[in-house]
Every structure is written in structure tokens, then in C-alpha cells.
Length: 169
Image (cartoon, rainbow, N blue to C red; front, side, top):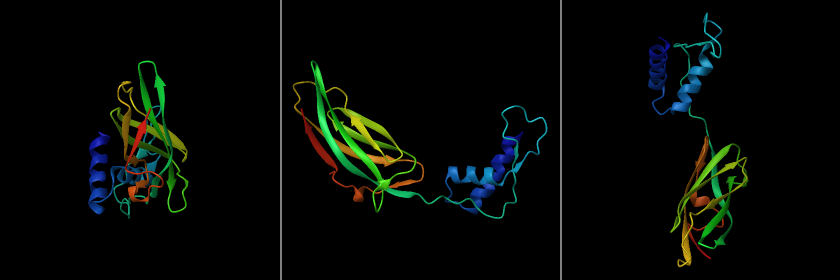
């Protein structure tokens, strides 16, 4: 029976700030819940009682603005084809410090398909195409975006990478 109550309080919280993200509403409910008031909650229960009279409203956290720094590109040649790759770094602007948290970088190789990689702690990640046939000498990589919790991607601040780059074997 807890679900309808929690959904109702979530609706009240969202009414207080219609721009709040689902993450902000969930965090608001968890932060304002009363601890250890439930009896026989069972093993693994967080034992939190939803509280509907919290004074504030859920707030979306301020994210860090990030951009992509191009590191390198190349190709790996195999007997039955080849694969292109691009290595990038995610940095926090304006000083290009290491991004906190995990980010996903998305791009496409044409030909070669969609590729994604995960950066943790602001390091590099490598996007690799699917196998490209030997009779195709060139692919074009297009950076599609970066996403991560509390990250705002600003493509206009990318450093050293054009929206598209060509890679040949």
C-alpha cells in the first residue's frame, strides 16, 4: 500500500517545482523521509516513511559543463576488413579538468555504424566502428553527444575535433 502514498507525495513535490527531474523528485522524497518508523519492514528494506509536509521543493542539481577533447584516431586492419577508432577525453570547462562521474560518448562511423564508450573519472575512451569491408578505404566519424548524470554537454566548446572527421585505412 505504500506505492499510492509515495506517488501522491511525489505529485505534490512535482507541483511545487514542475521543472524538477525524476532524479530530483526521488532524491527530495528520500532526503525528507523519516527513518526507522516502520515495523516488520523486512530484510533489505530502507525503512523510510514518506513525509508529505517538507518545506522546500525538489531542485535540479547544477551540473558541470563538459566538452570533448580529441585525442587521436586510426585504423586496425584485419584479413577480412578493417575497423576505425577515435579516442576522446571528456573535460569540465573552462579549465579542462577531469570530469567527475561517468559519461557516455556517442558517435557514428559512416560506414561502420554507431559506437559508444564510457569514460569514468574524466579519462579517455575509445569508440570503435564495426568491421568495414576492405574495398571501402574511408569512413567518416561524427560525434553525436555526451551524456552523464549532472553533466551538461556543450558541443560548441569541443577542442581539436570537428563535427566530422575522416579516417582511412
